[in-house]
Image 1 (spheres, rainbow, N blue to C red):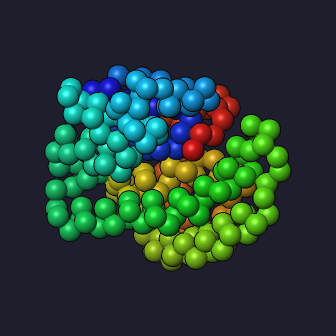
Image 2 (cartoon, rainbow, N blue to C red):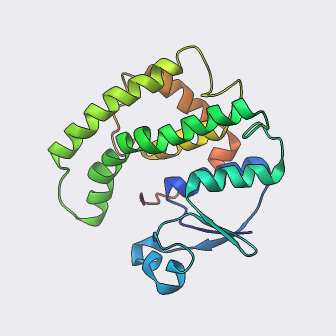
Length: 212
């Protein structure tokens, strides 16, 4: 297997974390997003969306983070990350899709406005964008916080792909000033995930800059 990635991308971190837990070691192919390598003709031939991560397993090419997470897990078989029970899988898929549709768009603007723009010299944060993000975070952060009020993980009693999908963008919560103070259960949940050895193995610790 080959994994095309940039190590500072939250989506790539999600895939790397799952692979680490599953004991899968794909060959890593670095895509330099800062030099727009994702728009090179060669890369576009495997992902016309010009995004990472992309997984290539022999002649099978797969893009979209959540699909890659499920595929990697399925290659292992019945794993706590993606158990074979169909209701558990449906529940995990539900939270993966929710993260993509609602949670990540609530967090991503803080990373772009408070961190990425500063890094790129693209001007100050846009108050209107942050105000809109705050409204989304108030709604969806509240949903996530309520769900986690009496549980340690999003689905079942152990870490699953649902947690990995929802936690990855919080790798920049501190430097991007994502206002998580009102969401005690979310913070407790994220601290549990961030304390795992797999998270520590794959999250850059060398000051790598955010790449969305």
